Image 1 (cartoon, protein in one colour):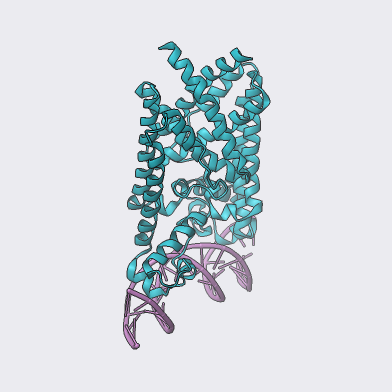
Image 2 (cartoon, chains in turn red, blue, brown, orange):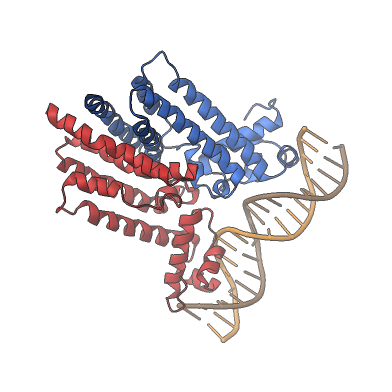
Length: 194
Length: 194
DNA sequence: GTCTATACAGTGATAGAC
DNA sequence: GTCTATCACTGTATAGAC
């Protein structure tokens, strides 16, 4: 973002993605993106004719990158499934900054625009599907694995909300720990009754 | 909001609270509040000199009401603690509309203003404390009850995020069900090892 | 492709009459 | 207490030169 040799388009995208994370799409003006990126007005509207175009490119880049990153971790078949789940849940996360993608679900500019909602939808759909597959690998029936995958993803998102509301990163850890501490006992009980 | 005999101040507050829920504080202009409430410009700035004053009154009313409502349910000592927890978790919720209070944690106008953050903080702090007490009643050690309370509140918030992202109210139910299905087995295991 | 200058509607607030 | 009129400023976008 500070590198003057980066193409204008990349600098604009970097700035937009950072600003969207910090203050949302609704709360970020094209003018701010210009100031942070150090690019002129004309370049912005050359590469991204409307704010919608800029937002779509920035959001898609962020969701794509995030899904790729988590996908590698969850599908690493060298490790047992429960270990992968716990590793995913206990990943270090920027609790106070919030989830770059989760926060978009309460961003009016995003939710009111079908094209902008789509990458957000696809990210969470893909993430839940990945997590569900890992739960199935643990031997859980499909319907139980289904609900538990939603729960796992929700714990992380809810942990972000709590951490920000309470201004305390430990809130996210507590939520995840509370969930993880139930994971193995519940699994034992289910295996025992089968 | 449609009752023309309601005092201006109340009509303004109703309109603001509804609009904040639907589109956030950042995304709601004083002018919109005027249109929806059907009140004149002067009245708004008479009762609420700045947008900050209106937001503070609207947010405080919402958090107060929400905490009162959930408090009654959780402290009803006629019912066993686990039953109260499950009742709280499985409460009918407007999944697609989102949480009136949780959404404020990604609202820039709220998070950038200490006075507006305060009711949001107090709501979640109060809610987690209530839930933790109920977990302690189940016989869980304090530290486990602590983490599990954060998890319970996070599941609901994360369920909202998922439901909105996927445009599917069933996502919130799935997350809650996934959590609830682990609650009793985990409790059994803990009681057994004590 | 990149720049500066400009246009125009909406936002947040004030003034002053009733 | 309530109203209409007005204002400075920002957000979003266009025009046209280099």
